[in-house]
Image (cartoon, rainbow, N blue to C red; front, top):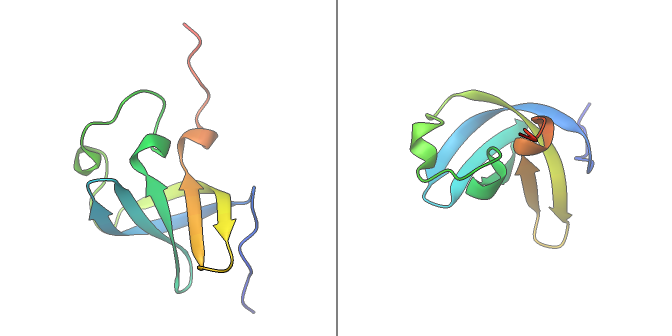
Length: 85
């Protein structure tokens, strides 16, 4: 049974491709989403390659869906409590 991606759902995915602007995560079978570098964690990330390697498993939240272009936006920082210090 195939699942349809739903905004707000949390998925465990695998890093497939890393670019300067983020990582593409396969979060459902044959469905990839972009984890933009700004959505990796609270605070600045200068190089996403220092956080992830190809094949890493990562828990992400689906935050955006563009059905017409089959694009999915993911966030990891949405699952991390913001440090209020």
